[in-house]
Image 1 (spheres, rainbow, N blue to C red):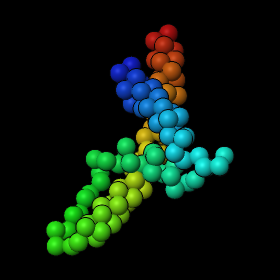
Image 2 (image 1 turned 90 degrees about the horizontal axis):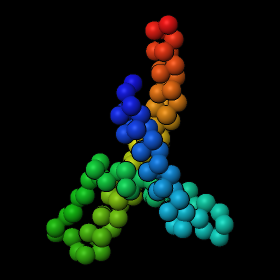
Image 3 (image 1 turned 90 degrees about the vertical axis):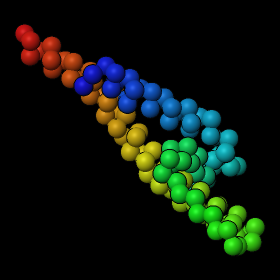
Image 4 (image 1 turned 30 degrees about the vertical axis):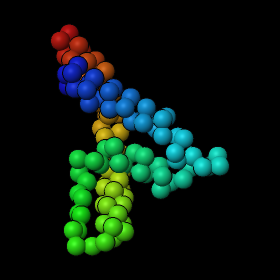
Length: 110
């Protein structure tokens, strides 16, 4: 495990997810309680944008197109939330694993 992986895949990802959660608390906290659907969308939409598909039917009316776009954003947000959880687990793995790998390599040299 390299220092670059530790920083890029560990610290920066964890800091980004923490910043997203801190800034998004104004969206997903309603009356002092967490709204889980909004929490999933706050974490899922920024992470799931590259995996999101937009189906825009051209022969529908405006309300039908807007409903289809909203459905695609919600489904993409749900997939993105799963991806965000995986990124968080991987970031913790890199943050914990890097010091352990350095300790093991130092002890192997001795």
